[in-house]
Image (cartoon, rainbow, N blue to C red):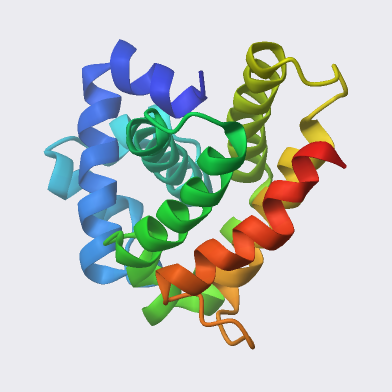
Length: 198
């Protein structure tokens, strides 16, 4: 479980701070938000925020991780009824693109402050990337066992799939119209699903 998820369930004050941070960052963006703003919105002192989150970067990272964790739960529900891992990968890719673009924080920041959020999704996004790769690796590993696939390490395939999805989110201009869900599905079916047997 990610640190954010643990913090959310174990510490109600941290949960309140993360709720306030989500609201603050969604309304005002990252650049125009300070730790003081989050403290006021959470109804706690600035010191309380700093006790739980070392600095603004840590608070942003933990807010993003918590939202990732929530997204993973929704994604699981969206693909649970699909019978094969290929189908879950294809639909999961489409759901991930749709969710991220529509999410008030992720989508809003990508539209309004791409230069500010970019480091959290790339060079400083190690924990978000790792959490997403871990999530997908676990699903691929379980599918290997359930579907009788070879017991190869699924982590490289999971990482490649995640990096492809992040690339389309960060730079959606493409010969493939990823906002068209049929085209996104066709792309995932042709290029991502075959990675499961590569």
